[in-house]
Image (tube, rainbow, N blue to C red; front, side, top):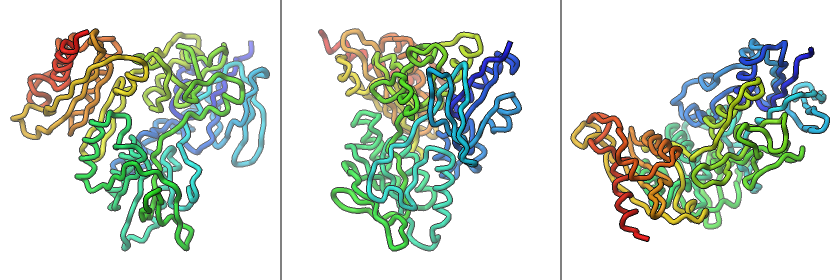
Length: 462
């Protein structure tokens, strides 16, 4: 009996996790695996690119978990620099283009995995493609940015403009600061980190100001201006322009779902592919999708959303690979946990912001506390702020945001578990968390916030 053929579109986290897991469950005599990747790299950490650019991670290859050769040694026919340009669902085949030779050809499949990732938001502005303007989505993007920095005259004043103040924006602001640039962040919103509520975003703004990063809020970029050499020289907004030797785009990403949409697969309100709990594309028995190209269920809000994170992508791949390989797996959803940093300031959130709660019709209360990440008397104790959101009357935890110094951000994991378990803030106050003065005050800041939120719930009445 001939082996079934699995075709995987995309050679990074979700795609190659799915291929590897399927191979563990079925050998090549049962399952042939063909994977297509349009770039030069596979299975790498895109989330680590800002830290490679900054110099914290010394070598590009440190970000690569598994090379193409290693995948091939596991009997996966991985075809690099080859882009899938069309999916024929009815004919169960994909059309691929070899970018090196220019050859285009069709490959049939019995089972298909779509893991096309996300694409960076790149607005159609004058000058957006000028030399010196960079995104940071792929290893190739990171290498191009580093090459651009190396090409600058080291004796001249060095100015970087970062467009966007979300996770990538603040991380790249830090990276440029570490390269000795004067850094200006142009932010369309009212404060950095729109993934936080405004009061918590203001703390990030204060810290960035203290680091010497100039943050301009309410700044809508209108054009990238170039000098006589054709290279970027300024970034224009509606109010004024800002000198720039290099521009980094950190505006966010969108699901790369064009192939799936053209093939007739269902996409959601955020543009991502819709799947069931087994990560099957909605309405298709033998097509799966995972990673940054899909929408996932928000367990707190009860709606789908698009979240581009390697943690989710790898989990999707494991679930898909198990199902393709004859096992069983599901991905129930997310609570929206994310952490980041700018220099020594740590930023974390999980669950809903206030505006998210309002958007789904939830009544809520909030509480904010200031504490330290260690016992106040212990050397190195530094401030941290915790904001907690709970449902009115029931006290069900809805969200937590944390801004603080070393040892602050990962405390959000406690809240992520509580959200997943559907706990109330009153139940959280009894959690048996680890305590010793080097790690926490006797009352952990998360528990202090929970106690204060319980009081807010009781005080809110009916």
